[in-house]
Image 1 (cartoon, rainbow over the protein chains, first blue to last red):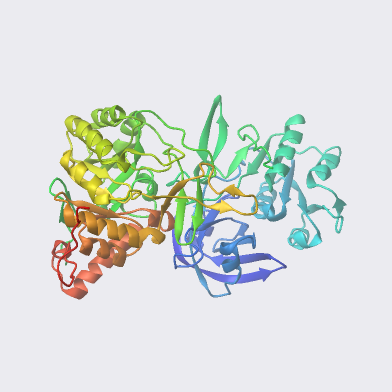
Image 2 (cartoon, chains in turn brown, red):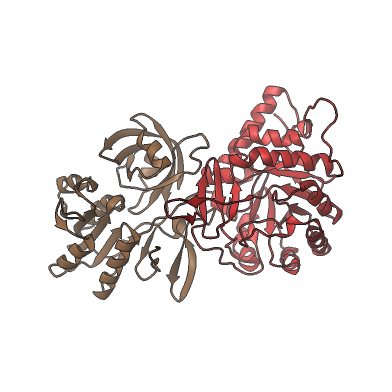
Length: 265
Length: 313
């Protein structure tokens, strides 16, 4: 992990409420692995105070991209940054997707819900370079919530879309779309990132079919590098259950490790 | 070259900047970003006798210029610390202070007893002031009597200097500081975090699972500085200032107010290089002001008329 106090914005793309920034930072981009994240200091002033975590959306040798939706103060201020502005970033942080098996000509499923699609483009590219045949499932509330649709298609990925309102693709949940497709192909691994409820459903589906699966979890973070113990999640390791730091031991965990949260009312 | 070293009487530091407990993990978490040898010292995360689970999440939230946390002191116990962390940590040429916790006076003493003979520990800091443990923020530092009896017991056992870390959640900080002094504490560090809360109005839930947490960061600095000034003006033992220090200027305010050293906390989370940056900024200030030795400026606040003094009510 490194600190780059001056990662320059070299490209910016905007949609309604969604943003993509390319940051020039060779020392953080080069060692990055899919599923890892960076911590961005949005202002040098004390407001907003803490850095914000962002998954690495894609990377080249010299730059990396982040993809986000405006949700609060931090992301709103970040969305106002322009090309040639610099950001102070830390990374690459955490442990990414575990890709240690032989993927040659094997099918894999990748599911993203809403802004949860962020880390999955990098993952899809990596899996393809490892010889895997990824199918991408991308779900959102409406067509406007699927801003990365074209990017996946343009780059030749096999893409399946779903929207809650039926404005684009399959009408319904991305998990239902996966369930329907699972009759037609047999992925050796399923990867997902999105709302807790979506990931929980995928986990049940995958476990039922005995397909291993991995998930990227989200949390508010104090530091991102293991110093504060603020971002913990209940995780099973063997027979032990413990509070593990998402920033250091995650953000990616397998279905066997995660204890899914109950929905709060 | 300015001489940045400070002498606490019981411990010499190469400079007055320490990493505060709970914000630098066990010290090694900062090592990928800074050279730990450059620090005046490291105060490692609070240790109990046994490993501890900590609180339910969410454990932290951000407030304007502040961080609200209720981590609940999750961590490894003294045994794992001694076996796995200490051997790596003691290689660094910086003061190593262990923050000591307990559920009872006896547990504090037992932690100190366990660590007493371990090589590489410069001093103990008694964490009698963490507000994130119980729902109502209760801790020994809220009362002069409980402070006294705890410090007294630990001092009987300890083979190393003892620093007592105070809570700001009291009506009279000087009274508590003086009771720690009377009980034999070698130094005082203050302040720990302020008992506070935040609410999500959409869900009407508290932002922290624990409801209450401790507030830190730039938001608390002026209050912390006032308390450090009050204590440093009255206590005979050295004071270490803590509370929202993010820059050399912040640190210098505390030194001028009378602190012999400072601990940098929340700033480490925002910028793991904060301590090193602060040391550099202090040095630049000294060069600009022609100060040969940093100790020259400690407690040199210029006030018209008499210095502040506590009045007996």
